[in-house]
Image (cartoon, rainbow, N blue to C red; front, side, top):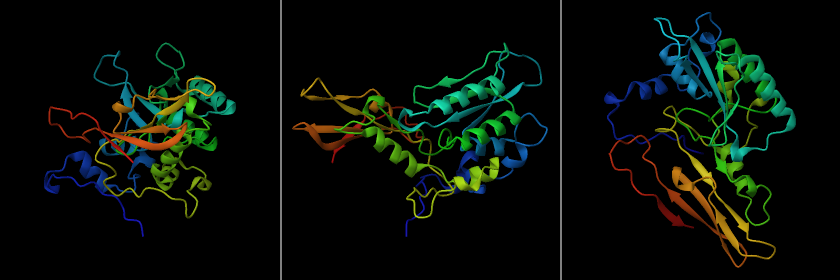
Length: 282
C-alpha cells in the first residue's frame, strides 16, 4: 500500500506557521471555500483564501485605486504541462472567457501566458471564477497544481514533443499527471461533473494533510540533432537550474542513454545563502 506523503518539518508543531496549521485543519482543501465563492461578499476569509490557492486561485485587489475599501478581484492560473498542446477549440474558449470575465479597469480583456508555460486570467469576480473554472473543466482543463504548496506546472521544451530520440514532453506530462492534486475537492468546490474523477487504479502521488513544504518546480530539457545525421545536443530552454528538480536527457551513440538530475531549492528555508545546484547521473 502506498504511503501518504507528509513533509518532515524540523519545526515543533507548536510553532507551526498559521499557513501550515490551516492546511492541516482543512486537509480536504474544501473548508468554507465552496460556500464563500457563492456568497455576496467580494473577497474571501483568510482561511478560504489559503485553500483557494490549491485550486489555482489568488485573491487580489486593484492597487491603482485608493480608499478604505479595496476593489477585490481574482486571478485564475491553469497548469499546462509541457506547454501544451492546447487545441483550437480550447484556445477559442480561453479567448471567449477572457472577453466575458477578465477585463481590466480600462475594459481590455486579459489573457496571459507565463514563463512557466501556465495560462492566467486576471480581473475576475467570484461569479466569473466559478463560470470560468467550470467551462474550462468541461473542456478538459483544470486549475489544479497552478498555485499553492504542491508540485507546480511541469515544464518541457516544446520542440521535444514527439521526438524520436527523447520525447521529454511526454515524460513531463506523465509526471504532471502523477503529481496532480486529488480531483474530489476540486469537483466539490466548483460543482464539476464527477466524471472528472481519477480512474480507479490510476497511479498518483498521495498528498498528505500538509501537502508539500512549499511549491515544488520540476522541468525536463531536450535533445536535438544538429542536422540530418548530426550529433545530438542538449537544449535547456526551460532553464533547468531555476527549478527544484531538473531532468536532462543524456545521449550516447545517437540515442538516449541516461538522465542527469539537477537538484536545488530550499523548500521554504531562509538560510541567506542559496546552495548551488547538485546533479546526479542515473
